[in-house]
Length: 350
Image (tube, rainbow, N blue to C red; front, side, top):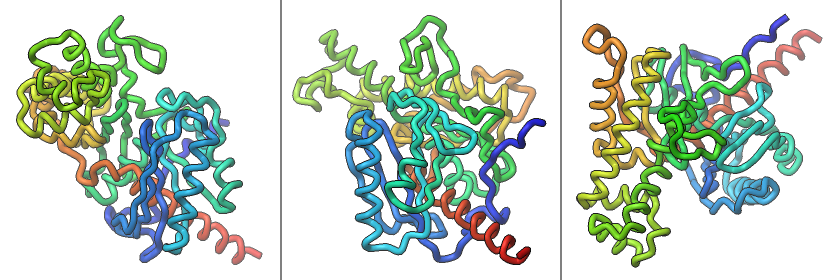
């Protein structure tokens, strides 16, 4: 007999309303470069946030940073639950990071380890699932029945929300949109394949293209190099984004190229999933319409059935880079509410 597919469900179908009124939950977002922790109330507001650099790829070192953050924030806030968002594929029980290319983790029992260290229940979710949940509950996706959320950072995370559920697929690995192959034989990806979408439409891709210009000593890279004291290897996607927002011509051109790739991939997703809304978040989304305007044009140009079908709307995320930790916190609150409900029902049956 096939087991039912695990999904995240709110106890009530009211976007923007909290399952537990005034309770505080702690959300942790584990990224390739930073670990962010935030105390989140029932309306998705961050009461306090702390950040630490990700201490390499050693799981024990990352766990130690998480414990430090939880304990520090726990001294100032009464925390009801803890939620963790991490990049990679989770098992269906939501306890193990099966594979995380950017952290180089394989079969890491993260939830079990942290519950032992913290002596409290922990909810573990894919970081893009957590961000999508937050945008559906509190942000750009409120009131939508079907949306795709994309997080553009080190790579491309993704999630599909359908009727108030984060769809995880049959094996818990739905939403890895960044690893659709969009350029066969293209750039090598950390997942092992070549030509993955995230090699062309992510913050890392933007930084790589800018560094190539700088290494080639192109006059187009003069301002880029000036921003990093002439050290080409210090050019990152964030540096390029900041320069683009300041009006620097080469940086704007590079962001536009990434936007073109973004729109092409979104057109592919629209053909498969047909959502009404695409929400684009993550660090690279700070570029705003410098990124989204070319993405919308490329989407419209490459959309299957264009001219004969309704087109989805592509918008920027409302919650910004904090969406992952807000969603992780809220998911932990939902899980805690579910646990309390089960306990009460068991007591009534005794």
